[in-house]
Image (cartoon, rainbow, N blue to C red; front, side, top):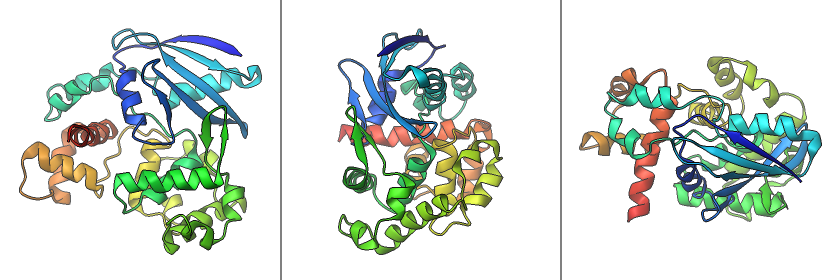
Length: 294
């Protein structure tokens, strides 16, 4: 077992990060000890790290624990990207202080965009979540992972592309997948193992190149590709206008009688660039908090 301490530039509110992670029943979150278990693939080897916050919002620091010394440095570098420790949030916060989102950003100050732990699981989760309410989307994803994935050191790993590609549609329908959604998840996995889709090179591509590559795959449209760009690759300037959650958050924020049009959303968001991804996150967070209070 190795242990490493990391100091991060504030503001960074890990407690709010844990709060949002805990919405996903697959996440192993301990609020009392301020920890989360992180399943990663490093050079295709599964490893589990524990991340514990020991600092505060303005002086955040973390204790990282893992077992394999072989992958320690690469694992820490991946964690920095996953939890957005590699780029200070102060510039983002400052950008929104004079915007229409200032109150939301103040309420959720220091909330970072936390990436999904690997590209494949991010894309699979996005497909599963398509056109479902958030509660059932999490339930369906949990069934998928706990039925066909595996657990290691208390953390859950999604099934690999090889495992998923071998599944039959009936196996997924048995856990309440629609036939179409089952075809999409299996088909994506087949594309990967046949070498037709290489997720590892996505980081080197532009937003548009990633979009063009992904929407060629059956079952992946603009919403899914944008969410992969945001939560898979961590791109900073994504604003999924077709997302119902963002539409609802804007409706509440501006007191609109109905959901905003695409043109209205474009008008609202002009001044939020080049941090549209953070505008998206904080708008989502604003309605998640409303749901938690009910």
